[in-house]
Length: 217
Image (cartoon, rainbow, N blue to C red):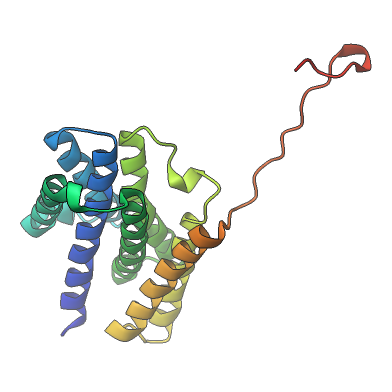
């Protein structure tokens, strides 16, 4: 299997799992069929569209290659149809989202490197590719985006993108090293969820009342 074929397959798998993640989140919000498919489409292809625009690949693959849009729409429709059989939807959404984050981070970083983007820039593109779909999904379903909350999300993508750039610098871009990089992102995201790891947040102190009196409760 050539690198380009492996990259295409990883991209399509990422589209499918992010579409399932977006569609599952839309099902939880009780959207109709169009809403579920639309959210799944945005979750699956938003990050890739952002990536292609950044590396000046026009039109983006999401529009130029029918397989991307078809995969996103069909996966979302399947989730809509069979969602009663999906137990523990919240857990399903989180696991699928972690898988999509991992796959899109790896493919996004590789595509940026192939477009001659310097390593630091390629890492940022890879991170944006990974988090773009989840960002769109959360905004459409009325949630505060995961990337803006305390959870380790964008950091996991950035770690994975850095690993891919380092492997590329060493000439190790075969399926096995890239799979290892994807597993790194996936594992880091799931461990962070399991152990409730989070980034620091500001500590808000209650305002003081005039004349040293305690604030009203």
